[in-house]
Structure formats: C-alpha cells, structure tokens
Length: 483
Image (cartoon, rainbow, N blue to C red; front, top):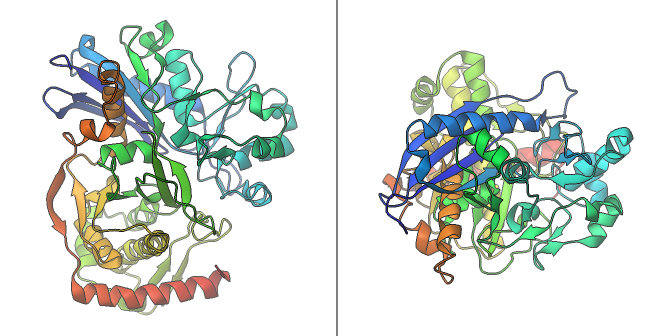
C-alpha cells in the first residue's frame, strides 16, 4: 500500500447520499459530505419513487465537496453502496425510461405475492411495470439496481455483484447466479436485460472520461463492484467474519451477520443474501424504523434531543401506550397494506415523551422479533453493533439492549455503508498485488467501537419480555397475522 493512499466511498440512500474519504495510511476518515433529497411527490399511496438523476447529481455534489478537503490526485480507488431492491430501467440508448421504484414501494405487493418474493424486491417492480405500463416496458433494454446505475454512470460499464443481486428476487444466492425460471416468470427477455456478474474483489470498471468529469477526478481510477447498502455496511461495521451481528437503524431497519454458508428460512422472513465479499449475509429487513420517531419530531416540533430527554422520564411500556409502527406497510411481518396503530391511549399518554418512547419501543420490539427468528435458524448473538442515524441515540441503544438481551455497541463511524464502500475499494486494489488477502484483514484496522457498550439491564429485560409478548399478540389481533 502506497503511503497516503485515499479511498472514496459513497452511500446512495433513500433520504440522502453520503460520501467520505478514507486515508489508508493514517487509518481514519479525513473528509465527508452529505446531500439530502426526497421522494417524488404527488404519487398515489404505496408508490415511492426517485429519479436516478437525483442520485447522479448527489454523487457529483458530495464528491466535489470532499475533494475540496483533500488532494484528489491521491484518490486510488472508489466504491459505491446503494439502497437495495430499487428498479432502474434504461432504453436502447441507455436513457432512464421512468423513475425508479424503491425498496419501500408497496404498490407492487400483488405482483410480489404472485412471484413468491418479499414485497419490495426488484422482481415485483418489473412485473408491475410490464403489466401496468406496457408502453414503458417495451422500451426497456437494461435493468440495473441503484448502486449498479451509479457505477454505470461512473464507468460506462454495466455489471452486478452477488450481494445486491440476491435482493432482486430472480437470483439464486446458494448457486450465486441468476435464476432463469424466476426471470422467465416475469418475461422471457429479462435474462438479456440484466448485466453480467462481477466476483467479490473485482472492479466494476474504471472511471470513464465522463465519470471523471462528473466527480472532478482523473479518468482510470478503479471503481470497486460496490454493493447494497446493507452488504457494504457489514464491511464498515466489521461483519467480515462470522459472529458479528449488525443492526442498521435507518429509514428501514435491518439485522444481518456474515456466515460461511447460506442460511435458508423456510418462511422466507430472513433473506438468504450473499455478502459482498464472497460469503453470505442472512438479513432481516423491516420497512419502518427511524421514520416513526421522525414522525413524532414532525408532529411536536421538538428535536430528537428534547424528545429523548422527555422519553427518559416515561417508564418502560409507556404506561400502556403501544405503537404498532407500520406506517408504510411492513415486510416483516409481511403486511404490505398495514397502517400504524396506537393502542392503549389514555389521558396523560399523548404527550411528546410518551409518543417518542412508544416509537422507539415499537420499532425495537419489531426488530427484536426478527432477531429471535434469526436465532431460531441457528445464528448466535453475543453482541450487537449498531449503525445508521438512530445508533447515536443513547436511549434507543438502552432499549435495544434490553429487548435483544445482549450488549449493544455503537461504532465510531456511524456511516458504515460509505466506510464499507471505501474499504471494499481498498481491498480490491490491494488484491491486485496481494491475491490471498481477505477483506477482514483489511477492515479490522478501520472499525472501532465508540465508548462503553449498553449492557442489558436485568429488570428492563424482564419488562420488555412481557411487553414483547403483548406486542406480538396485538399484531396478530389487529392485522390477523398468523405466521
């Protein structure tokens, strides 16, 4: 590794794009930037979309912002993490046919049910497009995922990698190849619309002249394969070896861990994803996470710090206030048409502190049910590492430690996906001269825990065990959930 090498990582998310620069010699992040954006407005309920141009522009803006803080001539590689399951369709001239349907779009629930894939997976969006917008479908010649599209803009080369591809719904994660029968169930032509796969540690391509102009860098810089935001967050959180369980608290909430063999859930609640380093990443995803607490912020006009202070004064269980937090439908449990439900309202419970704590508890209890499911499939949990914006909230960490019943730790670098993208780029470059190098050997030096772990309080564990049982009974009763 040459002294002073810098690696640029992007995380192209639902609410914003983040960029950071990692100094591989110093072992620290030396620049960062963020560009926020929203969803397309005016769409019918369930339709959640963004235009891919939004991501391109945000990547360009954040790149130029971080490059104003470092010497761009020292950038030795870059990588891109992206929100999973989105559907980018291009025509024969590689123009975007229509805005991208996102992971949280539930308008394709009927197609997902017919295909037998989780609501929100890319396959259901393709079938929806074919059935509902045939004039657009006739124009489609190329299908990409969000991070693949950004790579395509930067390199001019279309490719996928197994981690993100395993969230399409037409990929066999055990064989690590596209499923021809699943593709044919959507359209016989789909197999020719998907790009070739790149292996872990390969390059997606090199920065093209157009990509270099967009970012303000020199052409020819290696671009790693990148991956889904969860796969790259696993790298950035140190889940590059078995035994490290990560919970990501973002717009969606996810739980994942790296395994040396695929983990198959007969009920399909735990996705048998591939990792982006050649292994597997069993993952649970809930659609409602930080957005529930953000709704309380919007309702009250108070910020998270004030609401957290108020929520600390509210006892566990919120004096009977129980929030089933399915504001945008839900994937686990599989309730795409569900709405949120607030139970146990009494005089004195509709105060900001009660509502905020109920939001944290409701999302935590749903994540706890998912972690229990993963344990039933043989995954051992000794410690949970938190990433994402919600990881910074100490009250939420304490609640999660009690719900999970294991220590919970935050990371020094909360933007694990962007860090993971930079680390994957560093690993991919180093593999050219060190072919046997493992990603864990690279990542371990850069991943650090922040402060003391939140240890599970025995009394709180007991309280939340009872509240969790109430939560599950309420879900079954309210939504007729039978799984």
